[in-house]
Image (cartoon, rainbow, N blue to C red; front, top):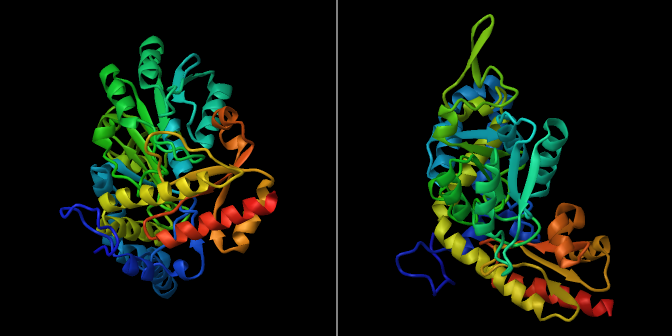
Length: 411
């Protein structure tokens, strides 16, 4: 696709045609959608493939429809693998990123005293899962400190904790949901490989926004959703499982007839691929929609998206920072397209409602989503705005103007 507004792009990079992208996105006609970190607007090809499959199910039957679309269904695994630099056999479909994450955790035989080494900015559901494992299995949770410069976790300190504790699992969230911080997951991965430690990465907010290469990151397991920056349907996600994890025999706690074969009355054998982390039943229209969304993202090009989306966010963040009564909260040298801010004189619900009234989609984050981070920033809540590549500079300016107006009204 060609671009008519990115003159700074090098001639060797694919370019974006914003008019075509927006024409492909029906939601652009109704709202200013700055909640892509929640769920991106689906493009028409994704919507169409899902509708077509539902009609086919109604016409010939659900089992028959999935059999008729077997090649397209298999493209889910192939397309995700292409996106991540993996093999289709390394990919498992999941009902959400959290579903994928808990499946991965369930495959680890935690024992009392085992250490989970993570960061202070891991996603809230991951933090809760670690606490649940502590409650049930007696694991020890160790949080690596943040670097004083605000760049995320202090990797050197985390590496020291790896050597001291020899954790059963190292876990990190690439881009936390509560801010635009980008964690140095590849640097963490290098230390994990050197020490032969199991490494799990939550890439929920970075897949579809940045190029993701699982070999470069050095992770054993990686989870993400399809509904956010990949612009796929809700109720979908995936798990990447490395060859070394598969070969070591890791399998989920609850495995079914899709993930294993019942080879004798008292025995079963897991399948060789990441399918052992899937269940037999699939929402096939959703699976096909995810494959279409990933193919759409690959056609658009991850490189130009990775250039444009954070640039839009930086424009918005700069304008918000100039508004009296507004405090932007994102840290790090190059934040992602999650723009968070606190505003004086407003409560959370009424402020979001005021944004909704102006046709601007946004999301609220609360202290309970980020106990460490929000305590450091001394906020109880913030508003999150997350533009994507199909948003425009004019929309950025409109949203910043709306926040400025609401800030004035509060004084």
